[in-house]
Image (cartoon, rainbow, N blue to C red; front, side, top):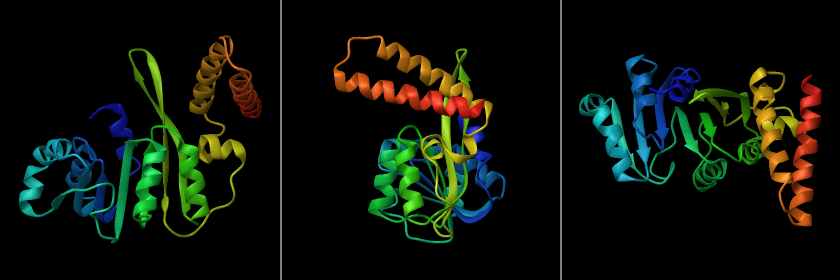
Length: 220
């Protein structure tokens, strides 16, 4: 398992049935089954070719009936149940589409690759309880790659978010990870602002820079 997958597994708790949507190689499901953290598991992917990779890894568990493989779009082919659902490695908009087209799982761990704020906004509006909303990083070729993680439940609600919490995650605030992420974002946006931009694009970039500076100032 790579560093991102290992860190994701640390957010997964005990459950009756574990569901891995967009399961890729199936490493998280193998971790759950090997560790005895779930009674059964479901691996799902919209692509039969992608799903076959996880089926090979989990062949023994599938043969014993402990794991079931479902080729479907999102949660469309998976019934509601006493589940922990993992959706990782997709954009926030794609995760949002999955939830709107099906249901919000009883318990979930989402790892959006982008547009995390849109996903947070939806979960808050739906009255979800958000137990953890932070970030981590993985170093590749000397560079840090940052990932957001949102862990919660379908019911219970949570307090309203500030603009900074909505943009970067409530549990990210005050962490070295967020400062590193914002420093990188500042450098990218400043380089972009130095280019030849339209009036509208420049105003948008300058707005992002001002917001990042504000959050960095609060972090100091």
